Length: 389
Image (cartoon, rainbow, N blue to C red; front, side):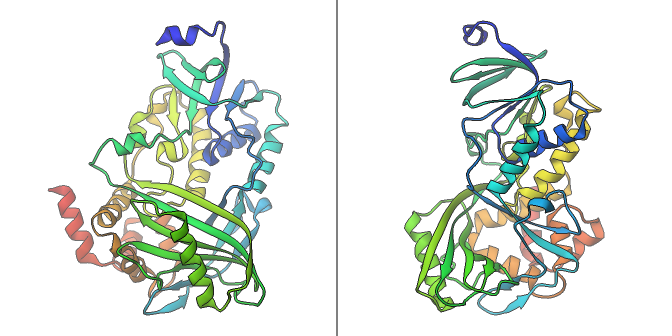
């Protein structure tokens, strides 16, 4: 294996290399740069794409001011939850639902990274890497490099797919950015989850991010194992818009995604000198598919860790929330249609703030029990017992 690396001749060495420039990689590199603690370290970021397209939208809930408010595209102080039986505006209790567009995030982060001469980019595709114990060897389609530490954010779906101990679902969706000819949206109230649509044996909901009375992102989302043909998502969006009262609209843009939802222990793949981050490291919130807030917290924690420790295998430790996520995924894997009733039970009454705090992995045990008590308890107890025995 080493011969394949050495065949490229002399390899340039870096202190840190990022393989893939996903959200977590860019957040980490940005925080390393602005910290001022890594100015004497050579850092290479490798990705085949320029990262200049508006290819995704991130949303997250947060209290008060946050790290990314300067590029926040929209924020809302309440949201609608709906199913076939009830509809209610959620009491956010001080939280805001914030939206950041991909293009704005890339522009902001890359502008900052461009100010630091110790940070360079290689528009290449990484094909392999190896921890030798003293350094890491990285091979791209065009070159080879060495580094002291590697951050890998290239997701390998074969890892969770190769086992059956932990379920593997997807949050998969297609969203249309539409502009209607007549007012149909409430610009102040996004639709967080609308389970009133046909479930067809799955966990399916509509998600609406309104920008004005005539403009919004309307997204058809599933938490399930298998993806659908594109026309099925789009037929559902068409039907939903018709139900809102509009058949005349312009589709300004489309977005499609599939986010892994699994409690597979990605951190077991970490070595002394290789750290898997982002979805590749299990940074995606397994029970919801939300990524932005988790990546913000973990990237900050990682930058602190780099100033104190050197063994990457010691960075990530699972918490009680890993088990909570696993139980929900176990339920959805066995009975995928239970998602709607579970989320409906959580949001039917009371404030949404404790649930947001719980889903952000920030609650105490007493607060955990307050949220868990809202859920179908028998279903979770049965699932826990199945896990244990």
